[in-house]
Length: 451
Ligand code: GDP
Ligand code: ZN
Image 1: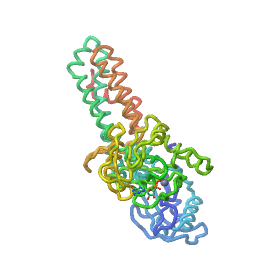
Image 2: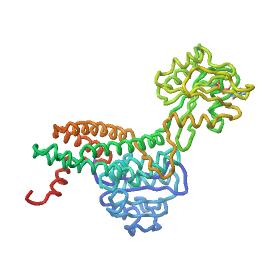
Image 3: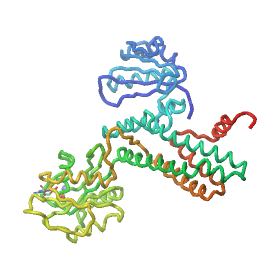
Image 4: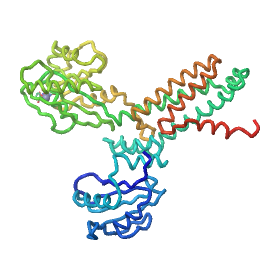
């Protein structure tokens, strides 16, 4: 951590493309630039250059871009070499950068340097990866908002509000006889409650963002031939699973991403979960089991002509108790009239036809609802939160709750101060400011001289 040596990497994905980019960053890369292209390029100008090998032969010809520190992505000198996007050329160019004094960058090292040099805070640095990893356009847009600092700004303002309150409480610690009046006058309870509700709102938005980021894992279970593969195909809109009329043909867990309102759902068609002696089928069943352990939701498919039978109940009983199950009665196209089925379940019951597509929209809506997705307008701020952020937000909320309780009791201000401090530190950890005691600085800078 914190090194400034020259690092280099191919920045474009492997394979062939029109253009490929090698990026170099470090404290001073002028000598590397001279060796590679014969001169130091004019800052922030695209200059057509020859990329030279050690012996002076030309590896490639392309565009060199030079961003001197501190106005670059990493905050260091950065050189970008845009050449022809073939793996052989790119590897030659990278090797040349290494022989000219750079070392191979580690994963995320450019962004790590950007963070260490104050170009991004921690939450923004994380959203760089989220933009790249986003599997739907909604998720990408959401991550981009975090990268632009929308999430960090909200966290900063919460931290600031906490800091103000801490200053007040800690200043009062020196004058115990005034404790209760100060608490009342400053409406500490009210401010804490307001802060708690803001934190709740942030957490709600963060949960939505995490749905976009992590997606929802759904398993399809049911007896052989009820239409699991067909439903999977219908939802995915293409032929992924094998559909046949022989029970037990789905021998492997097939996974497919289906986007519903921008939320990625990862559907897995499981092998028919039944007792079998077929060794291949046994392996499939074992895999299905492990997928089920990690699932967020299960779709139990039932042939609506037969209704729920004991085999279906056995499947439900074999699922983890806390796994929510949507009961899907399939093949309604084969029924005349309304199906007469009631199994005393909650509202998570859908009738459809995987063959004709009738009722599929109902299922899509049900999936969104069960996943906890709230319909929202484009402009509303959803934060691309990570597990780390949610944990920090949740824990900070607990500290705030404790603090509110203590403030109501109007005693033990030192404990109250401690809870506030813990909440502030927890929130600051999201953006990565380890404010050991920059608080002191804030307190004293606001006092007038002589007080
Ligand atoms: P799986 O074993 O549960 O994966 O079932 P499949 O998807 O392989 O389907 C078994 C058979 O049922 C195939 O012949 C499908 O064409 C048929 N099937 C599946 N869903 C429907 C449906 O909604 N209506 C009708 N009529 N046939 C269906
Ligand atoms: Zn199948």
